[in-house]
Image: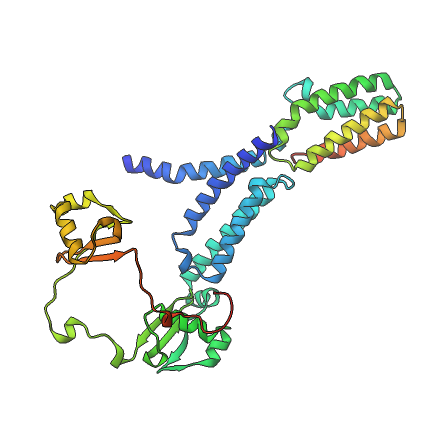
Length: 242
Length: 125
């Protein structure tokens, strides 16, 4: 058995065993992992790479190491499910970062978090001013949950007691300049109809549109290739590479 | 019936694959055992040791050739479960033994045989 054959066999063993292990460990998305679960995943990947290609090490101890990391991860998951105390120990707890518009600096320091990181997370929730926040909580998996102040919470049709209809699912008419004929057929329309809708939006040809979507009410949204963006909205606020 | 078969495949196939992987990665333990007289490394080494201790150098030379032939058979079988360096070390010690025998160096020959015995004990175990 030559070196290449050994690497091929080891790689096949590693690939399918990692696949089995990952399926056992669950379907959690990377963004929902705790920091430790993330590190554990990287360690498993690193062990897999060693098992696959490092011919200087006997493969069995690495295989045992991989199984042990997977087993311990499963064990901690099971413990966290069984006991709230263990869940708190293993995953941590939510931390309040903003209360009635005031940043809680002690909690920020405890998490070694900068104000710019908090601002970034808030912007991700369409909040651009701290005084619009009633409560902001950093969850153990790194996401920020925000409760807006009552006066900045959006009014819903239910508040106004206005009857509304659903816009339904947007159906793509043009993607990257290409007409989606299959979708036109599903809607019972043709290219002439599409051209008329595009013309209404000032678009002469589908090739000028990056995307065109129609909703259930027949409203057409068009995104053109030519974008206009004001310089005043440049987010960089100090010199350095951008 | 169908769902039972599906369950069997769903759980049984991965479990079987893990078991086969564990077996393959430990295959050296049983694949280093001889399938016949032609690939019995341990017997050849013991024979070689006895020839060198009794200074029968011609017999020792023939035993080294047989040992080399046996190693050629076993080498591929233990590659998967061994470290690359272990297999290389056996190759080099075998070459050193041939050199020591050709130059008629009795003490180096004995050292090389003892080293090969120690290496053989570790390979695949």
